[in-house]
Amino acid sequence: MYVAIVYDISDDRKRKKYSDYLKSRGFVRVQRSMFMGRPVSSIYKDVLRRSKTVISGEDIVHIIPLTKYSIDYMVVLGNPLSRIKGENIVVLSI
Image (tube, rainbow, N blue to C red; front, side):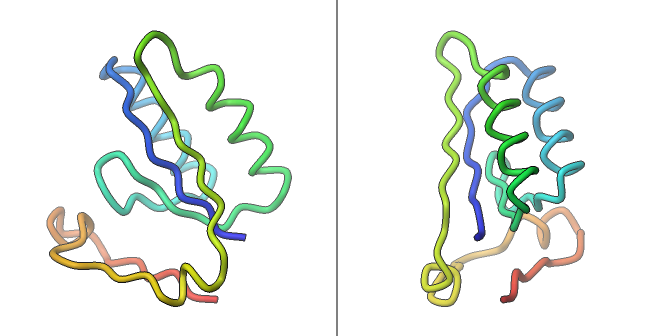
């Protein structure tokens, strides 16, 4: 299963810590506040637990399971964030 995580966290320090955490769990940044990954069950559960502790006040985290169909037919328009930042472009494949 693929997962998209989209968040709006107002505190800069918390937001940076959360994005570093997602990277450490194997997720790839695809937008400034969006990561995608293919976590095993234990990592998925860990991300759910950790995400609940990150949010406060007006913060929000969306954790969206994606099907093979949605990945196969995903359309990306414009310049991917990785290209803008000079990083390698990551393509998720099944």
